[in-house]
Structure formats: structure tokens, C-alpha cells
Amino acid sequence: MAERVAADLEALSDLCTPWCVRVVVTLRIADHIAGGVDDVEQLAAVAGCDADALHNVLSHLVGKGVFEETAPGRFALNDVARELLDASRFLGLEGIGGRMAAAWSTLPTYVRTGALGYSEVFGLPFWEDLAAHPEVAATFDALMGPAGHGTPDADVRVAGGWDSVRTVVDVGGGTGAMLAEILRGHPRVRGTLVDFPGTVARSAEIFQAGGKTNTLPEFQELARAAGLEVSSATQQPSGTLAVECRPT
Image 1 (cartoon, rainbow, N blue to C red):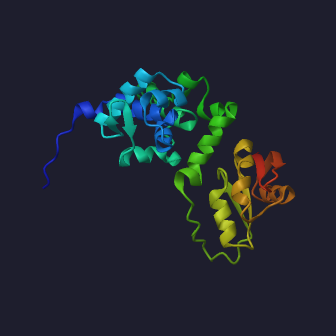
Image 2: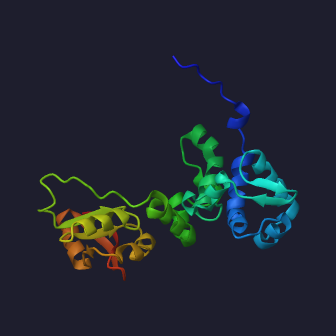
Image 3: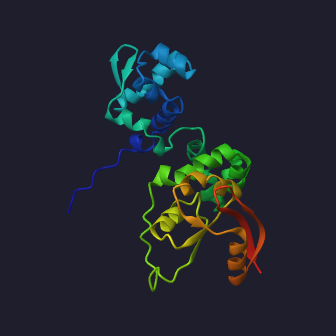
């Protein structure tokens, strides 16, 4: 039986390091260093922040193994710091990364009541918050799509095979990455993407590479057959649909 390693409570409860990481990502410090700016005064100037405060943050991260201080006030990327260049980690405090980081402060509300406390911090429940802030919603869609999760594996097994399938409706399909891959793999199939209007509107780039989407009348016919009433629907320039449905 392997010996259990004692947990380090100080390391487990450290809030300083995660926030320092998110701050330097938000200020794009790693990007600026990669671009040739290594002096803390110059870094502060291009990032629009206080040099002394930035020096304190970077010095803390150097002590944690992120960045190297090659000379007093001069910083370089190491292997860990280079990972901060990867935008798919969504560590910045602008956009959905900031929402995810700050939402942890609502954990006491959830534990005490069992209810979500998101609106305590952001003023609105999650989906309403995204609807009110399209720029944040766009980063959430990116996180849930190929930028955050890679290209979906569209090897979906269907009872009886794909030969008899003519239409795929992806409900809550985000910007359509999975649906697009299915349509590329099965050219005879048509697809309908159903999600919030703003999310569907951001699907154009994904569907430009191919795939036939259903027209609005075709989807309305499918919805009626499934016992759904289409309360509103808009055909997007990409060919996808922004649809609201409810049971009949």
C-alpha cells in the first residue's frame, strides 16, 4: 500500500498565486516578454500598469517557478510561463475567465443554501448575464467550442447506421462544432443548430468549411412532427437557425 503524502495546507489555501497568474495573463505580460520587452519598467508601460506592483507580482511568480528574473528587474519566459501564451486556457480576467474566477466567491452561498450565488457578484443569473454582455458570451462560446475543447470527434454511432439519417438537430449545440463535423462526415445529411441567437450567429466561421443546414421551413416542419411549437426563429447568414421552441 502506497504511503499517503501529507497535504500542504498552505499550498492548498494559497489564493495569491492563482490571482497573480490571472493578472499577468490579463495584462499579456508573457506575450510582451515573448515580443522582446523584458524590463519591468517597459513591461509596465506597454501593459498600462504600475511598475512596482508588477515587479512584486512577477517576483512572486518567479518564486513559484513561473518566469525567471535574469537580472534585477528583467524577466524571461521559462517553460511554465510559455504556457501562459496559450489563449485556450482562458486564464485572463476579461471575458469568461474572469467570470469563472470570481464566481468561486459565491461558494459559501451555495454551500449554505444550495442555491446559486452567481447573481450576487454579477447582478444577473449566468445565462442572463451572458445575454447582457455579448463580449463575455463570445468568450464562453469559444471556451465551449474548438478553441477550448479542440475539434469534436464526430464518430457518433447511430442504431442502424447513418444511411437512413437525413436530418440532425443539435439542441444546445453552441457554435455548432460537433454538428459541422457530423455534416462534413456525412454530406447527405442536413443539420439544424439550436441555441441562443447570439451563439448561433457566431457559428458562421465554423460552418463556412462545409455542411448543409436546414432551411427555416424545413426545421419548422421537423419541430411540428416532434410536438414542438416554434415561437421564434431567424435564419442566420451562415445558414444556421436561431430558434426558440416550446412543447405544444
